[in-house]
Length: 213
Image (tube, rainbow, N blue to C red):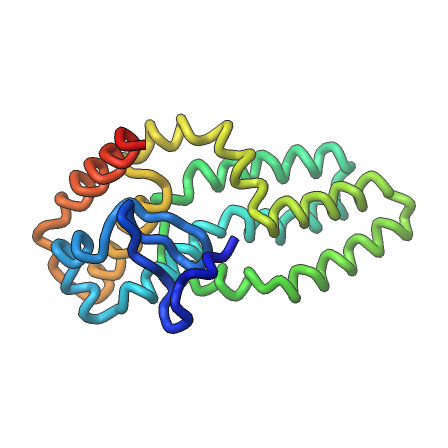
């Protein structure tokens, strides 16, 4: 879902309850809060770029599953392929917030190409149809739609939200942004002396918004 009210020359807009990107992702922080502890990073990497990379990584579970499912459908019976894809997706959703890394994100950004994915699915589903595996074709079509449109994230939240809350101190989007900023600082040998403030500020910010709702 894209946010049409965001100016064309910007990837995000700052709202009273945080930052919202053109991809529809909401971060429980403000630009001022980020600059208060991550200014050394933001001087070298624009916030716009960091948010784009964070959004690319947030889409990684869907992207990885989209590329994995065709191989599973070709190699396994439909039921096993479906179960494997679901488990693969849920595992990614549970673990990915802690592992945001620039080079890996670049790979996933390219892998998000709808055209490339569509061509692969068209080819694989044609093969499956020729083999008479109609069930696999239906699973492939439905999975492509559910994953591309982000519906899988909504369904997965029912299963992994509580586990994520136990594993990470921040909401998934904020955890990814934090990890990306920290890794960028380490790669560029930048000091972030006020790093611990992010968790307190984001936690307080998100808690305050929930109470006001």
